Length: 272
Length: 353
Image 1 (cartoon, rainbow over the protein chains, first blue to last red):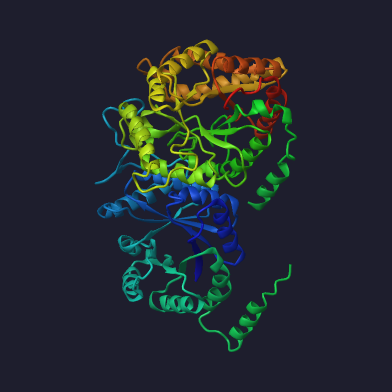
Image 2: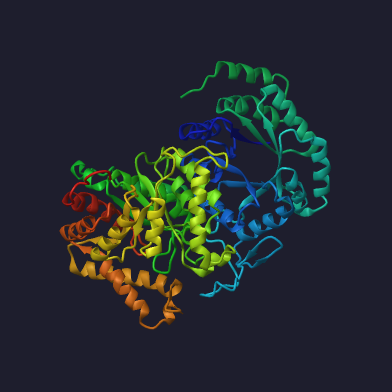
């Protein structure tokens, strides 16, 4: 199981950097950023964080379908370059664009490939080859610069992203999703060899260590959950890293180990 | 990867001892123009360039410059940066005072609500250090890739400016910028319509590097008249500069500069109905403007050239030191010479900078 902290209190530069640094220090895999009233453009926030805090994965959850996907792809590619290839893009359908979700998702995945492309879909056309644009017309377009990753990691989020799992695309389920429903879904996806290894994530609210351990173990038992995105204040990162993570990474704990961990954690003895 | 990173760290100079006496005039100077291109004349790995931007910005700030400028294009072979606010965000944590500006950000090619929000995020995270340099864009293929008509770019620009104002006023549920009801906006171009648009909205200007001091003065006058007594914004100008005491180095720079602009004008511009390279002598005619606009020579000569622009009404000059054909150490040397040898020769800014 891998862990991303979705900080609920990263509303300023200092708090954002603190969240990233504490996630790194406490052994979490990275951070997931969503739009907030204070910071309404999570890809911008991600660029700030990724350049300032090395090593951590920086995941960003954004709506797609409400603006041209080439513009979204460009922003993601630039942020991935700034991050040295550590961006994970979690996309969900913007309100009112649910019917176009698969097309927009495929436009993005096509753009992230290295091949020039021509897109003629129901919703998007690129190049549009509009009659008015006459100077040096192009019949294919391309994403420049390309992202740092050979294939930028894209997951879907929310209910409309579920169908993409059958094509091997990772999915981040919303808080409160039914593990049994997710189990059904991933069983269907497994019929497709492309789905092998696709990330199976579930968002969770911070609710204290023991409760979260139980929830994540249940998620793994039900649908093979392998990513946990935990919405929490940065102050919860220590308990996530020291209490939750070890108890979820190992399914079966040797007798006595938890008592030992408790003593180590209680003493907080870190040599420096 | 880590070896490369360590190598870069070693290459970083000590904090430059920027002459404090020159600070006053440096408030009117910025460094330009980061585009993240990998061209035939100057190739460079994209990930390395995007990593280095934060270091370059830090250096620009340490030399005392007030601003760093980026420029946008898209879908071209050289990977010219299409998302300026996102690359500038990467330098927020390594700088504390430096302002971020553009020459230019192509507003009609962006979703205006997304642009407004990206600007809000960068404004907040940078502690209010964002200026928006907005222009129309001119390449048909860029508009076409986004499903937009180039001939509607003026309408799209007005819509973008209106939407920015609406988003920042809370019409979409957002908070206002840190810097006030509006972020500072500088409108690019020298066409009468661009000047009129800037004056109508009370925004500033970014004038092109080809404008002579005389035409600059005339443009500033026209802008001031159209402001009709309202405050207006800064009069910015992008300018090609190269400090050297060596005539051969100056000639070599001019030759490389012409080649640099020849590629852009030849490939992208439509001149009298024909594509640049196919337009006969028109490219050379345009290049002559670039050549005349470049300020090349001794610190005294460069200071004199810049003073003429300030005298003509320009309030902020974005000094272009970053080109695909200039290696990073040479770019740093230009920053140093401009800050330490040219800036002290300039009169300090009077009034608000």
